[in-house]
Length: 448
Image (tube, rainbow, N blue to C red; front, side):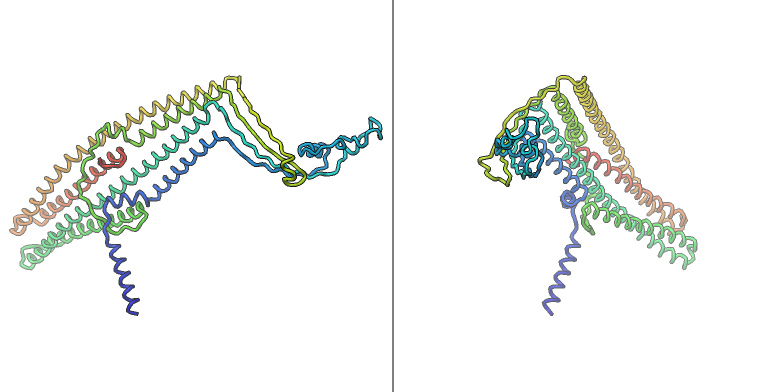
């Protein structure tokens, strides 16, 4: 019994220890790549596209198939054909046994009404495309590009999830920082509440002063409660992203370092631009596919077979082979092939324009994000100075209230300005972080 209790206590301790482990951002990113359900789905799609490459390349090796026919018939043509195929036809099958015994214009019963016959034919057939106007090669290239495209789409999903993960971590850090500031204010309000109670007893303050303090205290408590609830929601969202229960994380610094990638680096590595370029390559291969109609198609085949009225009966004696080749060339079809080639070329030009448009669009996004970050940096610098000023002003008005040189309403107003600056600073810091993560996402989600 002691051993069982000891084991249960050890398991409980390990479970608690595991739950208390804080998850770092780097650990979360690695976990995200392997556990996130959307990334897993994108991985399956990428693997499916890779398998299609084998389908396209396998066509150039031709097709080998085994065919087994089993039949039974008393049809004259079939019976005669069965015997001929199995190399067992005799003169009697032509009605020679009745020759000279019946008039020339009378039907031959032995030929027209044969006994039924069972037919087994085993055939091994190989077909090989010798030349297809480069069609198979072009399709193989297209499938490789499609697989690459699926890989880029997966990377885009990974980038998006990393962006959401990082934003959640830093949102949590900002909430925690703002909550700490609000708790300092709450502590000051509690001190002010106690001081007001003492001043009421001594006749230096009014009941309304206490009510104002308590109302402000309740407001700050409400804001703290909202931040706690927002933290819970972020933990739920992190658990969703990582497909695992997350109860505690290592909070990063509230300030995110600027993405060091240059505009050229981002444009060269951006997933959307790479996808557009891959689409252009596919369109070029589609032009080659459409041109295949102007080339002759050459194929070869070979087969070996054996037939008998029993399965594989006298297989060596009754075997037969056939080898051959076929050339087919579409000389004229009303200009349809030319129209298809022109259509493919137009689509290629359209895609080339879309590639340039993607580059211009991403460059515009980069310029816009960098400008926004610069603006937020200026706002943060200004708001921090304003917060320092409101903190000093509040302390000054709190001292003046003690000396009855300011009213409680004045103190509450200054405290409200404190809270306003804290929340405004958190909001701007959050927007700045989000913009930096957006810039990183354009650069494949890495802070380079």
